[in-house]
Length: 400
Image 1 (cartoon, rainbow, N blue to C red):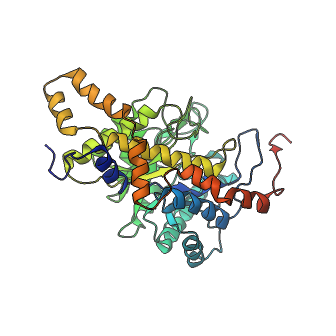
Image 2: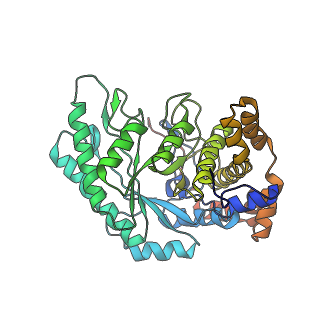
Image 3: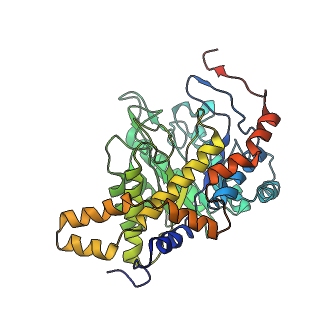
C-alpha cells in the first residue's frame, strides 16, 4: 500500500514546501465583481470590467504565488463579439491566464423553467447552443475545463416530469461532451436546492456522477462545498469520487446554513482539512497526484473582495499543509489494526500543528512576501483603485 514516492518523510518545513509547491487555486472573476445580497448592494471599489477583474486577480496571484488562472463566466466576461486573443493578451498583462469557462444558462428570462431540462425544445436548443459556444471559447482560450451550473428544477409537485427532464439533461450534456477538444473536460456540478425548492434536476453527487458517465469519458463531477445539506459528510463523497476516478474539481467556500458562499474555512476549517486529508491519502496510496481543479466560488459584499481572496488562499494553503503532515503509513496500519484512538489522533495532531512558520518559510524561499495580506495592504493598490473607481457605484436596494 503506497509507493515510496508517496511516503511522508522529512521535517515539517520540507513536507509543507513539497505540498505547497504543487498546490494551485483558481480564482473566480465574479468574486471581484460588484455583487450583493438578494436585498441590495453595498458599494466598494469592485471590478466592473474584465480588465479590472483580471487586474484584481493578478494582485492575489502576485502576493500568494498560487493563483495563476481565473475562471471566466461567458456573458459576464466574454460577451458576444469579444475576441479571445484580446482576452489572452489582457490576462497576460496582469500575470494570469484564463481558467475554467462557465456557461450562463440561468440568467435570461427564457430560463424561467429551466435550460437543458426545459419542456420547450426551443429553450433547450438555445441553452445547448450557448454551452457549445462556451466550449469553443474555452478551446480558443486554451482552457481545459467547461463548468456549467444549472438552476433547472421545479418548485411544486406535479408541475413537471422529473424523468423527462432527466433524459433531456443527459442528452444535452452528451452533446456538450462530444464537442470537447482532446484535452478538455466537462465538469458536472450539483446542488440540492435553490432556486428550485421542490426538486433540482442535478440534486446530488450520485446524479452528477451518473450524468457524467452518460456524457462520456471526458466528464467528471464538480463538488461545491456549499452545495450540500447540513451535516452531510462531504469528505465521504470526495473519497467515493476519488475511488471511482470521477472527481474533477472543487468550488471552495464555506457556509453556515446553505450555499452562503462564505470565506473558505471561516465556519468549519476542520471539514476542509478532512477533504484535503482524503485527497492526500488517495494520492499516497496511488503514488501519484490526483487530477483535481481547485477553484474558489465566493462573492462577498462585506469584506473587501481582494483581501478576502487573499485570506481564502492563505487559509487553503495552511489547511492543505496540515493535511500533508499526516503520516499515512502509520494511519493505514492503525486502521488495519482497528486502533481507533491512534488513527483519529493522527488526524488531530496534524490539524493542531501550527504550520504558519513553515508556510512563511516556503513563501520566503519562493521570493514571496511572508504575509501576503500585509504586503498587499502596503502596496497602495487598494488606495489607487479606490480613487479610480470611487463614486462609480452607490448602494442600491433591489426593492427600489
